[in-house]
Image 1 (cartoon, rainbow, N blue to C red):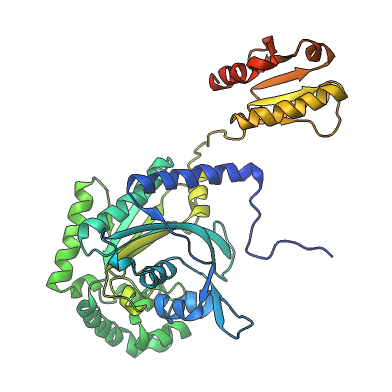
Image 2 (image 1 turned 135 degrees about the vertical axis):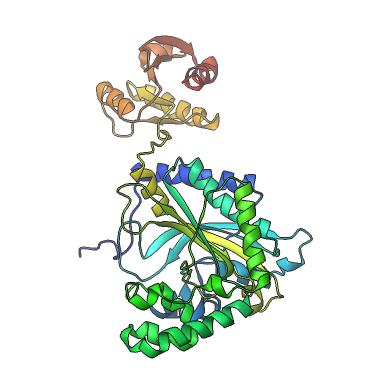
Length: 425
């Protein structure tokens, strides 16, 4: 049987996992600087969480979810995004009662969507996201955006564009919704079946349609910014003011519509403008979801968050030719000459590791020359050679591979000498 990867998934091999680890640690460090704490939720949830939380008019719910019945005949879904799960946990564990508000959380893990595979898009993908729940201060909107931008900048990206918009409050959305229905309804038969279904349920989603995006009516559609009431307009003005204070460049795009139903007020996307990055330029997106906590059974707690694909971040770094630090090198490789020497090598390898020195040895009974070649391939900083002479002297031959110099070192002082040599590299 020829068993291969399921379509839309990938194996991340050791040659690449080091890059992932660098990026993941960078993200975690930035979250620590902003005082966001990690939350881990299940990879599957009750399907209703996503139909209610994400919205039953979204492409995610209608076309992309992996849903199944368990043995108790319950409908479960592999999580397609992270916000709904985090908000569910926020409500279930009564985090709204925590003395420190807003509650600042981040997550990182696999998500699942049934969609066509393309560069940087998989059916199982890794998403980082963060949520700040419990504050309606425009300053927290700016903080969330600044955290997103800081991650990309720390990763070395320079070709970035931040686009923002306001989706308004409920009153503004209702007024805009009526204008959209009146605009599209006379010609709705020109649009795809999805848009026709969305006309009465959520006409704002028509503006996000990829099939009909070139229809002339899209260009003349009523802009939400023209329907913002005084409160929404003032809120958006403050968000822009804070971003300007933080020296974060942005563009206002009245046509920016996030693909999930729970967004209101601030919405934003971060894009790569790097040459060769690809047709899909979006790196991250997010916004406010002030009604989502109440929708999922909690109190009326405002929230804002965003999510980014780790795969797309790595692609953007590749497009900008950003080099990764080498984290795969080995401190020391131990070479044995003879059976008795191998016993000592085994003992010393274990002892070095106990002292936080990365060490390896041969397990294929290879000759000394082959073992030395293995040390080179593993980019070892030093080699320890033990043969009969060394055993008699209760010592090892320690060789610095960068200079070629070597010295006889007693077993009793080996740890200190190896640390001196490797820490200097």
